[in-house]
Structures are given as C-alpha cells and as structure tokens.
Image (cartoon, rainbow, N blue to C red; front, side, top):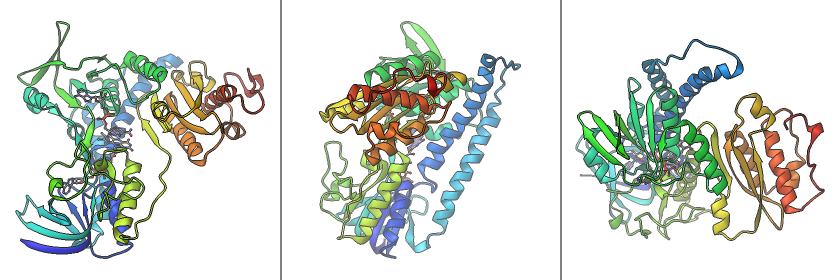
Length: 480
Ligand SMILES: Cc1cc2nc3c(=O)[nH]c(=O)nc-3n(C[C@H](O)[C@H](O)[C@H](O)COP(=O)(O)OP(=O)(O)OC[C@H]3O[C@@H](n4cnc5c(N)ncnc54)[C@H](O)[C@@H]3O)c2cc1C
Ligand SMILES: NC(=O)c1ccc[n+]([C@@H]2O[C@H](COP(=O)([O-])OP(=O)(O)OC[C@H]3O[C@@H](n4cnc5c(N)ncnc54)[C@H](O)[C@@H]3O)[C@@H](O)[C@H]2O)c1
C-alpha cells in the first residue's frame, strides 16, 4: 500500500471541495484532493445546470402554448424530445468542461483518485476501484466535502428495481419518456415535474403530506399548492403509494384507479454522503443522524483539525453555500490552528418553478421558532400591473420585519421574478435595512418591484412606523 503524508487532505472535489482546495493552497502546497467519482461537480453534471437547461426548454414550449392568451395564434407545439435532451447534454458538457479544465490545472501530486474512508483519527485509506490501488494518507488536517445523495426508501428499490431513477439519470435520457411518476413534492420534484409536464411528458407528482415546495408561511404554502397543483398533476397526502412493477412499467393505484409510468423519479430529499466514510473510526463528535457536529462560522468539527463543507454538513444544500463553506473550511484547514470565524451571508433560496418560489433571510417558521416579535406585509400579484401585462399575475409576497427596529428580517414568495426580488430582499436583510429605507429607494414603472413596494407599505402600516404610507398611489402609475 502506498503511504502519503500531507498537511491538508480534502475528501471530494465538488463545489465545496474545489473551494476548499483553493482556500488551503493559500497556506500550503502540501494539499491532496481525493475524488471517487467523475470530476465536474454535482451542480454542473447532474444538478443546477442541466435542470435549468431542461427548464429553459420547457419555458420555450410553454411560451408558445401560452401565446394565444395574447392573441398570438401558433399552429400547435411540437417538442422534439431528442433535440431537447441533446441541447441539455451539450450545454451541460460545456459547463462541466470549465470545471474539469480547472481541476486539470492542479498539480498531479495534489490529486488522488479513489474512495476515501477514515481508518483512524487523521488517517484515511483511499481505494481506487479502477486501478485496484490503495493509498494510506496521513493528514494533519482534513476537509470533508463529500456532498449528498438522494434519499431512497429500500422498499422503493425492491418494488421498482431499475425503473427507479435519480436526478443523475434524467439528464442522460436520449429521448423524453412518455410518463414519469415523481416521488416527493419538494424543490427537485417541482422543478423537474413541471419541466417534463410542459415538454409533453405525462407526469404525476406524489407528496406524502399536503405540503408543496419549501414555503413555510401557511398562506403562501396554500397558494403554492393551489397554483402549482392547478398545473402539475399531483396526489398529495399519499405517504405509502401503492406501486407495483409490471414488465418495464410501474403501476400506481390510487382509489382503485391505475396509472402507468415508464420511470419513477426519486425526489424525496437528499442526505449527506457520509456512509462508508468510516466516521466511526474518525474520533469525530457526531449528531444523532451520524453527521459531524460542526461550527458553521469556521467549518470546524468539534475541536479537531477536521472541517466539513457543502451538502455533506446537512445544512443548506445550495451551490453558493457549498462554495462559501468550502472556502471557509479550506482556508481554516490551511491556517490551522489559527482558525478564523467568517460571517455568513443572508440566506437565499430560489425554486425555478413557474411561478418561481423564493425565501430570503429568515423564514416565517424560523421567526416563529425563535420567538421573534415581527410584523408581516403582504401583496398579491393577481392585480399587479406589470405582472398582469405579462400574464404572470399570480402569487404572493410576504415580508417580515422586526417590531422594534423596523428592520427587514425575511421574506417568502411565490410569484413572478421571485429570483430577482429574492436577491434584493436578501441583500436588504444582510445590510439591516429598515422598511422605511427600502421605501425611500427608487421604484421604476411599470415593474414587478412595484408589487414589493405595495408589500413594504403594508408592512410599514402594520409596524406603525414613519409617515402613514399612501393608501392608493395613483401617481405611481396604473396597476403599481
Ligand atoms: C437536481 C438538482 C438541482 C439543483 N439545483 C440547484 C440550483 O439551481 N441552485 C443551487 O444553489 N443548488 C442546486 N442544487 C444543489 C447543489 O447542486 C449542491 O448544493 C452542490 O452541488 C453541493 O456541492 P458539494 O461540493 O457539497 O457536493 P458535490 O458537488 O456532490 O461534491 C461531492 C464530491 O465528493 C465526492 N465523494 C463523495 N464521497 C467521497 C469519498 N468517500 N471519497 C472521495 N470522494 C468522495 C463525490 O464523488 C463528489 O464529486 C441542485 C441539486 C440537484 C441534485
Ligand atoms: N433551485 C434550487 O436551488 C435547487 C434545485 C434542486 C435541488 N436543490 C437542493 O437539493 C435539495 C434536495 O432536493 P429535494 O427536492 O430532493 O428535497 P426537498 O427537501 O426539497 O423535498 C423533499 C420532498 O420529499 C418528500 N419526502 C421526504 N421523504 C419522503 C418519503 N419517504 N416518501 C415520500 N416523500 C418523501 C418531502 O415531503 C418533500 O416533499 C434541496 O433541499 C435543495 O437544497 C436546490
């Protein structure tokens, strides 16, 4: 067995691992990045990018289908599934190429292929299935950046066999399938189910509860269910769906009615990829789920020279969070024992459904849990001018502000341009803006942001702060 000794070993070269590599390398050249799978990151290969490419194709099909609503008649929509998937893969490969190019630029001595596991505190064994080679790595500091994997119930695998697929496999389809059942009603389920539905695939989504998507504000959660449920065929409250395999098909039975599908897509959450990592031999403190206990401002696990970043830490499974956490963990692993505390950015999450969904700052549920005294400002997009112009006039935005200071604490929304409003709002939360400061900012006409202004005015009214807001702002422009 080959033996190596390094200052910093990084397990996983996804977004977090690559950030950690760059962070650690500012302090030492003795860095080893270990990777068991293909280079290219989950985000670029099978996550953010290919899913958004599929959604972009679905948006194009939907725009054509929705054109008659503007008096623009088109002669039907024909989706060429092969061409759709070809573009998804070609563009995806381009994005993956940028990532692999970056890894190709790392010195060979900094890279090791194979599956890493702890065999003792500070000691890893790396097994490369391809070459059969084993390497023992003694590392003064270790970064765990192993990402996440879909939650798959064992009985699904037993019943469905190779008809059960994960997000990874979807983007390798050469053609669009005829029918797909989606297990889950969260982010991946909504994004992929709606995209496939708009591309002409017969889709059904199964939710084990009545919840649809991530919003925690009960009124907006109900609105998400109403709006998305009106378009995407779904069965909610089906905790144990009756599924059986018949040949190459899967049969779902609900209330005596059978429906047949080519594939069942597992979209029931993702858990940290920590199994087989030998954490039991690592000497690290673990929580009840077996996830290392860590400080989110340093990435450090307990008081040991081990850091954790990205989806592996079971916190926020988002690209920008993985990148930040990777940089923090790598920098601290490099500079250890002089571990630095890094402020975190305001939370921001977006679902690329139509209408989009976003959460900025603290969610409604988090504010309630923390016992914060807050007021809520609301707007419906049903009559919002620009949204109506675009026939995108559905959804709602709720803003939450601190009762004492009038500072914006958070926001939840389903509605038009949520990805953009989410950015504005998370920036305001991070800056500590008050509702009055936000109202004093410019608002163009006619834009969706005028809906935000209406919600801010509603919030200012509830807070009873500043001059009384204008009740009906006629000089703001019609529909503002
Ligand atoms: C379908 C989908 C869509 C998404 N869309 C978005 C989006 O629009 N916006 C957004 O912000 N986020 C999105 N995400 C989430 C985002 O992709 C992840 O949060 C991010 O990629 C996590 O990065 P990571 O570095 O933690 O993990 P990864 O990129 O998965 O990297 C982990 C790496 O560790 C390697 N590894 C694991 N175990 C070992 C081991 N024992 N030894 C050696 N190597 C190991 C793996 O092979 C992998 O390369 C999406 C995710 C999915 C699945
Ligand atoms: N736009 C984005 O930023 C984006 C897109 C895709 C994924 N992601 C990230 O990936 C993560 C994982 O996505 P996801 O959609 O798998 O998780 P999720 O947590 O968003 O949703 C999981 C869904 O599965 C359901 N579920 C859980 N266990 C189940 C079971 N045993 N049977 C049936 N249903 C079950 C839940 O009720 C929920 O509806 C997200 O939390 C997000 O952080 C982000």
